Length: 204
Image 1 (spheres, rainbow, N blue to C red):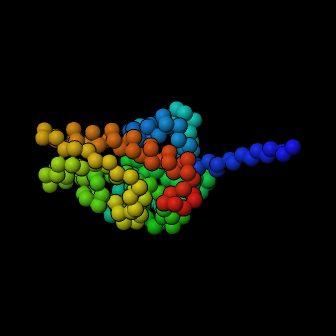
Image 2 (image 1 turned 180 degrees about the vertical axis):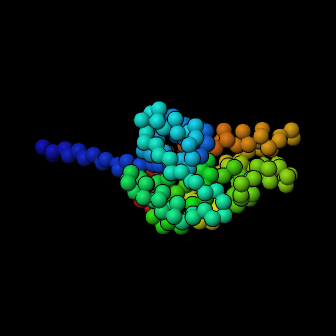
Image 3 (image 1 turned 60 degrees about the vertical axis):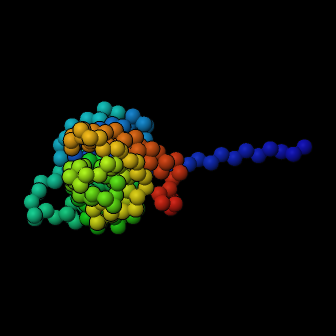
């Protein structure tokens, strides 16, 4: 009689950190989807921290005290790397994080820092993407999930979804519809990464 041999494969859990600065609606969507968020980091005290604390996720404020031209971006980024390393973080999701990060983060976590942008990159990079799209008169804009790099709004694109611009849209109404897509698309992209254990075809 032939013996039957069963084997099981245990996938390594991908440990996520989420970086926030505000109300944390993207973080809330990630937590609601049961993504493996192990750490929430904010660059200031903000309402979004409560979402992580409420479900027992470690929350840290890595306070940015200098908002002027003298801000040491590299030093701040190195401190963030130390914090991520201390929590054994595998990948980072920036979710409305107000501080542009510098090279130390991207060197420590190559292709493992994700960001979202309220436009169809490479169109309309920068802080005023929704306003810029309206001013340009486009009929379609949308949302992009991409790998973050030292060049802002420039990294490899992981997912995009279009959002139609309505005739009566203003910046607020259009941005709200983009945010609805953004929450779903970001969660779906992160879920794919967690389930596959890969980003851009490379193991995390």
